[in-house]
Image 1 (tube, rainbow, N blue to C red):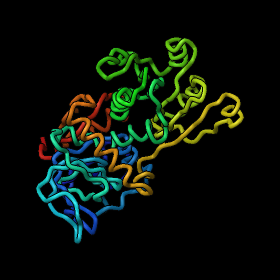
Image 2: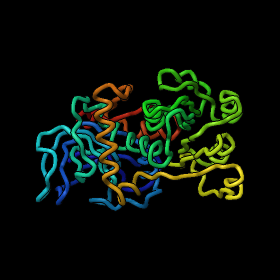
Image 3: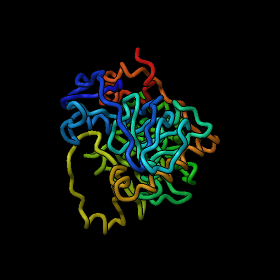
Length: 330
């Protein structure tokens, strides 16, 4: 089958069009003929080698954490969606940039009335957004939320979900001042430039701060986020876009200022509590299809542009969700 992958870790240029064997579904798995594949920052990390060296068929790894398409086959003894049904799936072991992908039934749900292009951007992005808000963040109605990397896939999903869950105010930060004008279209009350968000957040909240901060950036942004927390405020960390490495929080500071830090990793949740991912995926697909949860259609590009898309994503030059139209080669 046709796929897009890499044989050595490195920059976007290592991605290439390849031929690899079509995977066979095992027990508890389904084979999906992929229509669209979502693009996520974790796939940049995968390509760079942050999850190890390529070890897939023929020495290639195929990125891709989320897909939409049609069920082509069921594994032995598998009770799941019917062959021919349109589904969306989360792929914790990657493999989405391909004509076919295998997924465990815990991570596969029917798309319903949602278009396949939109559904492809849901299985990783939306369960993560629900997870950081509800599971790790313990969001309650009436609270104020601050979302870093606000114009990205998870950020823009989390803004709308936070509002649906009853947040009173939703603010965000972006990497460039030019993006602050996107606030209304992405569902925010306001967006701030990330380099000076502390004063802006304290001003707009009359000094009280935010109850919940979602941070995939790390480094100085994570440290500064602690200083804008309201009493009993929480910072949820779920990534390290800036490649800052580890950092140390002062427990004395957390205690004395009634602050908390929590973590969320969708891969860990998928390993230890897979049903949670399926529940959030079903919740998101239903809400998006019904219009209960508003969304902006993704940017659809041919997979031949995979290197350029990775380049823009790595440089922070994207907004919203991008998906590959797998059947469209050029």
